[in-house]
Length: 426
Image (spheres, rainbow, N blue to C red):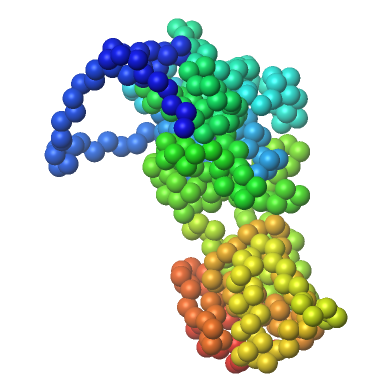
């Protein structure tokens, strides 16, 4: 494994000005009760849905790792964030340990795209801020030198690096994107960010399995990890935090991807309702929880006869293994001969809902398609199924029921009104 080799016992400073080794002051234990609590000051991104995910805004010195599939909107969202922060030149909200004075700017480190390509995107988004500076550089030590320079350290309000996998240092022999390079470059940038109190947003690649590329220590190193989710060819985007040292991890930001960038969806249920096709065979509405938000979701199913001995089970937006279990429950407990039927299940709008509360609406959507009968008007279902076909209670049921009544649903199928699948009649 690549590591920076330290020579001698004297302190060494890299080309980027990062202290790597040397005698350090001994730490002493501090009594927990003697530590003074400090309120966390935040900088609003002026993007409400992003602030929601971050816990209210960006904390000075905070290091955020932003990840997602290629083309999902990472660079677009970060450029919009840069524009929002650069447009706000009131620095009174910044934490006192930051050395920022005078006119603020955002430093955008372009490792993947050229300045010309970023300019094309900014023109499309209508961004013309003079306070955004593009630095085309992949040498992390030169980037740190630019941050530490006298003309920059007093004015940088935010640092964006797109992406961390393109950075490298000459202190290591590996190529950019290798485990050692990603770890070392991220560590050096994080150290400078916290020393100066400047927020740092790092873009991280994902593997074909959807995990963040690079060493796992990258996720441990940063303060917050956020993912941008959604189908590439759908316009709905979910931004969620899987780690957050400065806020909750149960909040979700909802955006709509347009030609003008990532637009906040302030009324998710109204947005999703416009696309629902409830009332047709194979459709069942439910209330899913995304973070703390109850969202109206439509589950669609298609059951069709097949001549092949091994019928297909296709799941889009729901867990495939859970679909197999639900099909088995319907066959065993309700005597539905699905062993000779292809079953396709999807969530409309490009959402992904993996919680157990989707069991009952998935089962009812399959039954509706198989029997060619629509669900009763203004009916909604939410519940988990056990292997005996019983409907079990789900978490936050009261919040879901409250949202369903607010949306005008008259019949709500749950563990309160339906004890078993066998008790449901069209």
